[in-house]
Amino acid sequence: MVRKFKVKLNGKEYFVEIEEITTGIQNKEEAKMITKQDVQMTTSKKKIETKIEKKVEEKVEVSKGEKKILSPMSGVILKVFVSTGQKVDVGDKIVILEAMKMENEIKSDVAGTVKAVLVKEGDNIDTGQVIVELE
Image 1 (cartoon, helix red, strand yellow):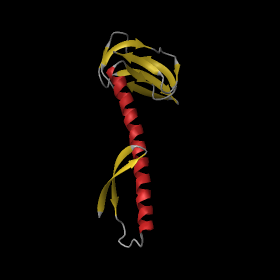
Image 2 (cartoon, rainbow, N blue to C red):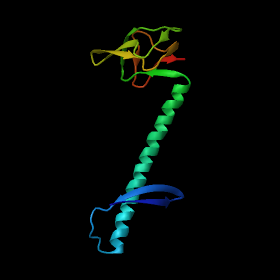
Image 3 (cartoon, rainbow, N blue to C red):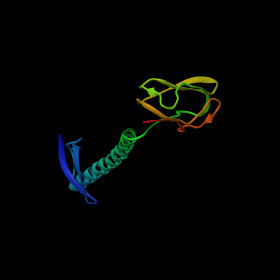
């Protein structure tokens, strides 16, 4: 049997679903202990969900303004396929990056116009470094 509760914890309200696992709860203390554990698990889950929501909001804000294409790994730029002012669609090749003796095509995950190319052939780049800025 699933029961729903509204719990207020540190000034915040949480809606909690508690499932009765056993029918043999012996006393009120045991019932309180089970309820407290469920509330703690729900609170932890809520904190994780909040962190995820913040990351999603950050990504959305970035996509509203300037768009940046980042390097997914460290390596050396072998070839640059775009230039300033060029229109780029999703999936277009941006650069070829050599990492661990393998050539990796870095493709655009957003559409836009190239505002700036921040790397050139032969550059060593780090993970997360901006390769191209788009408008």
